[in-house]
Image (cartoon, rainbow, N blue to C red):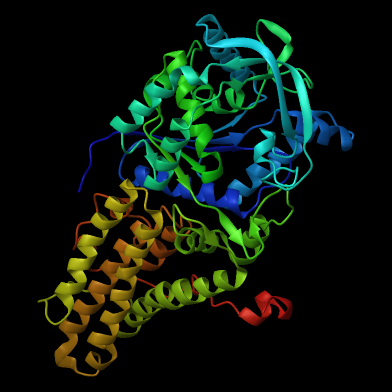
Length: 522
């Protein structure tokens, strides 16, 4: 199963530091991190980027209301982003901030290039503007005269602006999407974007004059570059595009995956590719739009104030449990409903009962019957071959599903092996074999098969629950054998006999739901 070395560049959206992040942002970043870790496991040279989108009128106004400069305000909020990613074991290679000089220079360079090519022109603009959402709306899109996204009041703005000739590239982009069917995923998002483009693209407002918290237009400094040319360019500015050292850009661009929420697919699948086309740069290989994490009250939004703080959940339940829940419970690509009751249920059923119990039973029986020693396996019989066949096949299934960005299905496929191993314990009844000295070799074979299955499961769990493997390697007695932790080591029978396992505390203790949730949540 050894794979050739390759590169893999994955990005999250860059998050807006108007306030602390919620569980929906955590979902995006955990999903991207799982993909990054999976490709590292397979031997790829991975670059994983996240960051913060720090300019705009909303930040300027909010900072003023808090009696801070915009930079002072965003510095404090961005620090909470980085704290959350540390707690969630997010393994990013770089964190880009749009206030950094490296970013500013690239944005101005690309803006200048678009202008020089005749793709940016000056005109007057009028539209209904929602400051919390940083979005202009036509009057027909308003709901009861308010923002259709957050329901807040909008204001009619008219100002001189620069515009980007989006409409010029519509046919070229449509042709590209048709020739590259995997470019926008899932298929439902691709269909939405195709319909949107065919309905007619308007030229895009790309500068503002009513605030100055942004990157100045290089040839007209009374204008600042507006939102999307600034924000989207992070994906190349972080790689040093156009700088003296552009080695990262040369190595990793184009991006392999831009992972974003479905609400910003249009910006990534229409505006960004057209900017790149106009600038003469390669397009990303794939834009993946996942669904929303919903509450009973609807879409989670910082603007609405109905958010779940993932930092509090990590403190309460642990990073691995939160990551597992998000990846398993929320069907990737579709919307999913969050509830703490479902979270506790997943922890108790899947992690404590299924995986945790498999680990503790296996270690406990090896300790009890063989003083912790793993014996060499003997002849196969009974359900052995079925378990081993599934263990061998599961990495192939997980690999195929991750390649298709079907993260929920990949975790589910892995859990079928967990369930099969638990069933194998019941089928082989090691406690009954232990009573018959003549069945000692058979008992050793059963427990070897369980230990080796656990090694497979743990390797495959690593991208999704990165805190888990080190704990299991320690119990399995192979903490000092990194060669047994790798993708190429997913070959049945590499677990050496003679190693000694040990019992340990429950890796996923059961949660007392009544105590955890409280009466008001039940």
